[in-house]
Image: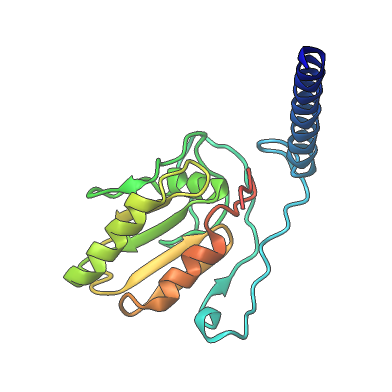
Length: 189
């Protein structure tokens, strides 16, 4: 009986070892497929049904690059969805002060969602805070930042995607679900 248990233990240990090796090779292959952390790999954007009513108002934009820069960038919009950016991203969270666009774009590259708000309804801000509290990962989080002039409107951005809403509605949840964790630097979903 002891010999059987010892042999079974060896089989389990070896099995776990091979699983760990296989998983690390799989992660390495996926990492290389996307060109490493900031490489020019084959990023394949998430494909969603653009005809579905929940996605009909999402604006898809071409990538404006992923380079790291040390100076301000003119994105040509208040709500960029890609482009050169600072080497350090904005961490997921709820912010009361405006954040540099160059850091927010880096966060989009990670797979985070950025929600811009100004004076949303009380229920809307509570919902936004709940998303920020729920989605805190570095590569699949939610960031909420103020943006003057929106009034009750909201703007949600993900890498190469933007959704502008007159006020919060179910389309925001669909947007977050579709694009959170799907940035080109390290897709996690």
